Image 1 (tube, one colour):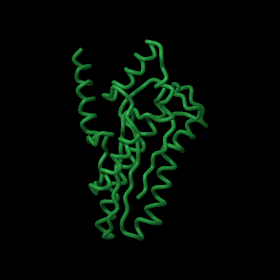
Image 2 (spheres, rainbow, N blue to C red):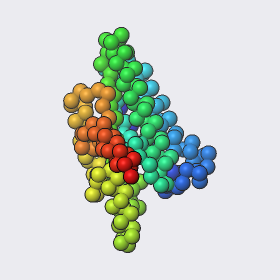
Image 3 (cartoon, one colour):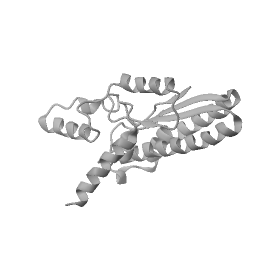
Image 4 (cartoon, helix red, strand yellow):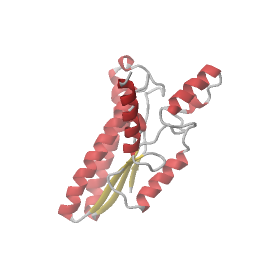
Length: 193
């Protein structure tokens, strides 16, 4: 089993507008969030899973990959790359599994906002204006509060015991397509203005 959970918003832990990122900062975000995940996944597949003809891969992305937000664009883009990679990996593993007679499966969890060191600064907001900003950020994901990391761990467990393959789910186990459908409704509403 290989589980990749790393993610950063920026080298200093704070978001910023896209045009303010230096090339070094962009490289760092994509190295941690995407490149390291790809390299480690390839190593596990080639060194362990293919020889054993069995393996499980789970990565943690973010629902932010499907959204836009001030100051989080680089993070959002990197997590979109993770989801795209995992979707293609699942497709390729389907073919490999048929050809080689193996059982290698991959899934991705795309949670909303999770209580981690990366979001800790948002949880410490005390003024009424800061609370409103936090509530607005959480509501984009349909949340009233940050998700507990234990909830994400439980989804990892659920995917493993279900022997799932080619799924992208949120922290509640709901397929991300439901989230995208809700976003489509918002887009339709916008067009009716």
